[in-house]
Amino acid sequence: MKRQQVMVLYLGSSALDSPVIAWSHYDGTGKNHHMAGDSEEVPYHSGLDALLAGWRLIQASPLVSHVSGDEFRTDYLKYEFFFEKWLDCDE
Amino acid sequence: MSDNYTSSDNYTGSDSYTDSDKNTNNQSSVESGLPLLSSLDMATFVSRGFLRMDEVVPDALNQAFLQSIDHREDSDGQSVQEHYQRVMDSSNVPVVNAGTPLFAAYAADSALANVLAVPAVAGAIASLVGPAPVFDHHFLHMTFPASFYSASNRPQASQHTHQDSTIDPRMAFDMQLMYFPTDVTLAMGGTRFVPGTHLRVVSEAAIARYQNIRGQQHMVCKAGTVLFLHNGIWHGGGLNRSDTIRYMFKIRMAPSSRQTRLWDDSDITAAHFQQGPIFWTGANARRDPIHDILTTAEPWFEADTGRLEYLNRIRLWRYLLGDKNFDADYWLTRVENEYV
Image 1 (tube, rainbow over the protein chains, first blue to last red):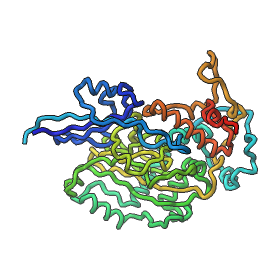
Image 2 (cartoon, one colour; image 1 turned 180 degrees about the vertical axis):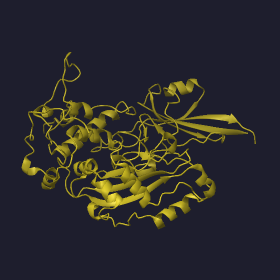
Image 3 (cartoon, one colour; image 1 turned 90 degrees about the vertical axis):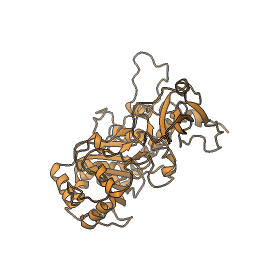
């Protein structure tokens, strides 16, 4: 049966070939238990590098207009890209 | 913590600020002789959201604190919950109402009162939240080795990245003091935090999805180290892979008056309020070091919103200076230059 691995990359801009600034992994195979603070090295230098490594892009942040009066507020990381892999697993 | 960057030509304020505006409470800080933070320290706190003082608390005091919490080396097969209950039942950490004046929160000559009275610590508190801060809450954070989790029947994991409390859009800030009474090795899962995230307005655990962020720091330190954090900084407890409980005692405190020039601002010069060339700077450009601090990027900055962080920092620096015209690299002047 197949299980999904999810990787979330946060990039420096909306361009998929811009640098990775933050990352998360969730492994549906159960082989790895990733958690906050568990790595210091970016898994890929850019989103494009992840594509070259076989990850499939399934979601990208839209570009959202700035609300009047709130143009300068910063909050969540802006350029979030979800990738997946499907792996064969034993029952 | 850092050397003054000038020894002469002291500047007492810009047009929008006079000595009479200065918080009168600050006078008591100055007169008390506490070693207040310098302007470089404060600008660093404004930009990065933290200051760190290594081994600032003497070891005798660390030992007194550990004794006050009834520290023991072994778990006796206790679960995390059982151990917390035992410490709450047997420690001398007081139960204190929110809103209590900070310096009334701890019995005179208790370990915690003495930690707060360490001159460098007291000076930093006075510089950041004034001479009369208000106690919000405190907590003894313990990060447990794997053995405690086998007794708990729950998986051992690091704490999700979060911002404390809830959405907080204020310009004023609370300060969270983190005191590490023992050595903290990398394996012990010291507090993880991300410099420069403190001015982002987010909703507590909404950022839990972010596992790793470039530039994140993990507290590795000797006993007696104190971390001073802006209440907004993104952080989380680490995973303890050692055999020893890792302690961190946190005190959240709030200012009781406006945070204007509470630090030792005698190193601010007239040059601090002048603009210099941008980009095309010539070969021998000299810049005010605080301007540099306010416009230095963190490794995680996005290309566009990293610039917004400069604006956030400059706004906070204006607030703390009591000077609505201060700017660095024209970031705010440029977007405020409008004629109606």
